Length: 76
Image (cartoon, rainbow, N blue to C red):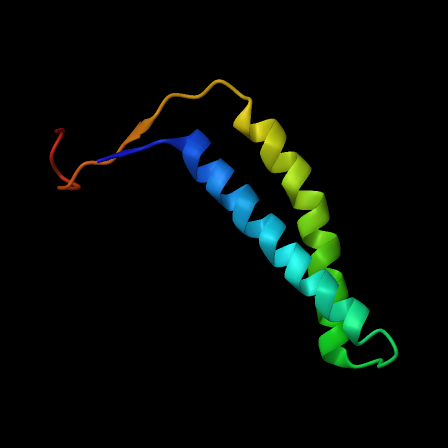
């Protein structure tokens, strides 16, 4: 099985973008409440916002596909 790192990074970026949008909407809806859950959402959005540009840079780094053997002791 071959893993395509660029596809994996693209999928991760898309998933994180969607998650950040959902969390940001939650923060906007509950902005008058100060709860630990709201603070966790704010921190998650900030973390994701920092991670996405790093993933975009990593996506553009030339890397080869990683081959994964079905048998860890085999060289297939």
